[in-house]
Image (tube, rainbow, N blue to C red; front, side, top):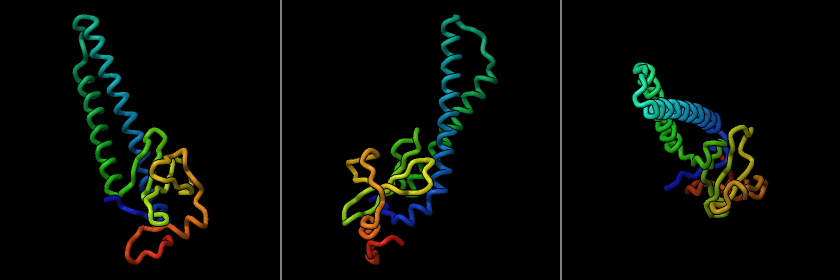
Length: 152
């Protein structure tokens, strides 16, 4: 079952989510660089028929790749525990589920934006983003028993 956020709750989590996304992008870059170096070394060995490889450098690169993979896994688990949906890591696009007029929609935020200013339906995605206006604010909430539809 998804977690539903009010706009205020989602805004409050942005610094934590921003840091997690930036960390994920760093580790993704590290993983890709290490993986490319390992492939290049392996290809060089194949092409040359057994070129000599510095085993300590190769093992260090493999450890860097594995460390970055583990860090990425941990970051995504942490983001998932918060209840945030990562839609596109490359651009840092995330959604917070909320309810608007009784239906599930997403509060949409992209890395670098100063706050959450957009929402969209589940099928609309990023291209269907709409500005958060007074009507949205008056008709959204978490759907809890004590929820009056207004953000906290």
